[in-house]
Amino acid sequence: ILKVGGIFMALLAVYLSTDKEDSKVTDKKLWLLPLILFIGSGLIDTFLKYLEHFILEQDETNIFLTSLFLSAGICGLVLAFIKKINPFRKKELIGGTILGIPNYASIYFLIKTLETPGFESSAIFPINNMGVVAFSALLGLVLFKEKLSPKNKLGIGLAIMAIVIIAVH
Image (cartoon, rainbow, N blue to C red; front, top):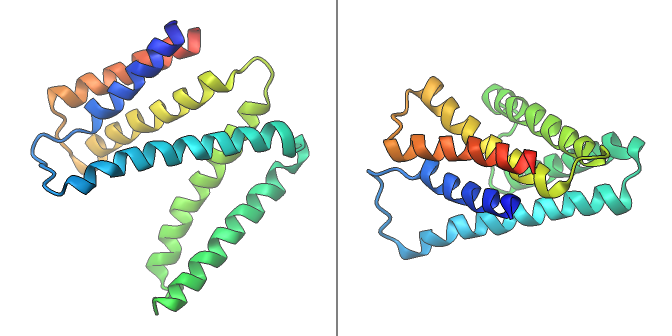
């Protein structure tokens, strides 16, 4: 019951920590984006757990991730050439590297954590996702001097509490 409560607290935390009071959505279709993100993230988490449990051997994580990122890179190059965008400019290469390395590492360590006995995926995924939300909000505060409303601060606090509740139970 506590873990389920922690998950609901986490969902509320995501809403509160990302809601901006000065942004008003006028296009009703835009309300679908958080739902699509939620479903997409859940599908990715489910896919990773399935791969870890049924397909990947412990020594195959690197080859799987290298193949995955190489495929994504090739798709990106094809799309860039179709759209007539030069993907080899210095800014794009630096940006891709800055995004690619942490993404590779985060998926690698997520899979390794899923492989670790004693860690339940029902705790790992919410903790990981809440950590990303809380860290992103704090990063926005530090790097971009974003102003956090009391609602955003409450959301970050709830995210931290949700992580503790889910991790302990």
